[in-house]
Length: 255
Ligand code: PEP
Image 1: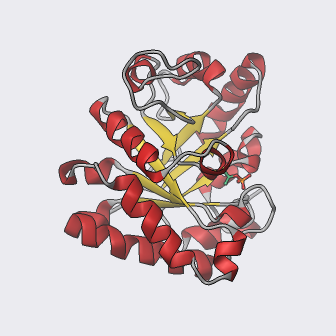
Image 2: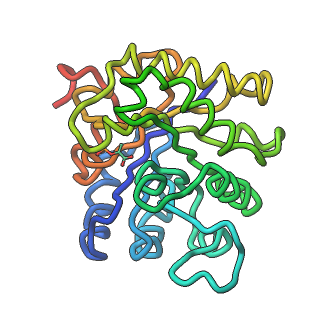
């Protein structure tokens, strides 16, 4: 049984006061939401205050990035231990913006994932193909390479703590969502590859979909057998919108 996981990735949005105001408005909206894991990933500048705001709630704190070393001359970076100190339960690694804008390799993502687990922080490992790669029919090859490389040092006994996020790059921030069937096809492929690597534990690993998830399309995505949650950018910036995603009701049933 996999607990659905709905995570908000705020990217480089929200000042401290905006982040605090979000938490104050959001928590009452998701009170009583049971059987789901809800995660907020604010910018690093707001981790401390958002974490304080979440104390006493079941909503978990996540970082958007991490450096794999514990300390040293890495100007501007935060270590896994620092994130643990801030109360992070999860951290996103290998987001396509980090891969494409900051040149992060599978090997670097893998080191981050392993270093997070050492601090008992669950990595959300993102993979996804670009539009060119999809049009060249290279989707499965790209996903397999990213997945294998990014999970390489993850010990088998920690596999179920990892969350994989399938985020087709052409769907991120574009308003163009993958159809539920297309997303399911890739999720099933990811689970099959995870089974090759981790055996029966693959059935317990959560695979999120990300890419223009909205209150109106989350229900159909979540209805797919291998879609266990969503990683949400734009539609997670408003408390009302993200709270509707957390409930993933049929569109006509929601307010
Ligand atoms: C993301 O930030 O990972 C993302 C999927 O963004 P959006 O929901 O805006 O497409």
